[in-house]
Image (cartoon, rainbow over all chains, first blue to last red; front, side):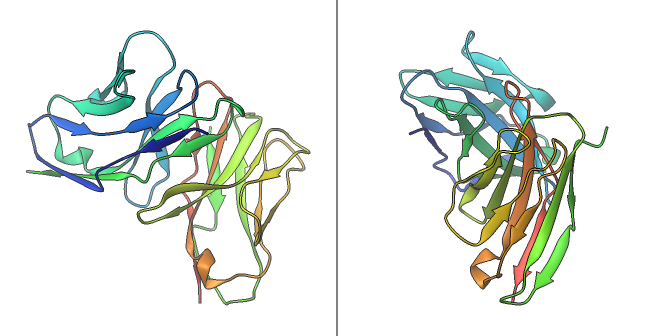
Length: 114
Length: 110
């Protein structure tokens, strides 16, 4: 079975500083990994995905994620945080047996302080 | 292009009542899903449908769905219980690009 874990319920960072939101995965084959963001009272929005290829994936709003196979991680990063980045972030993995099923982590609340 | 539309946005239901949450997408996506979102629990898959005429469930009881056409995927709570208080998210996908989500229905069962 596929799963992802987000070890931090909350991440606090000052505006202008780099940010990292952590995600680790457990899959039986090659992983298909995703990051989504949820702003207050909104649905989830797709940020970026890793299917294959370069380990550094670039996405929306200046975010990027680094795929590390040896550490089974897919951490979300941004070089310089904005207050407007404050939101709930979810990591997800696609089920390899049922290609249209996704499993989500528990979410990490990112707080960017001015 | 509206994407995924969910109605209502908020609702309060009494224990034992039934209700249908509406979900519609206009992207001609074959695959649609319902998730519930609870604090600290992330998103949990309730039901999914690979195409019109097919549905599969992930959780055993309390919910029903139908998929009569490509666009609509309503979720029915048969006899509401307080444990079903949650935010319900509908999503659709063509497959390779991940989900497009609706804005959710916040349901409270009292």
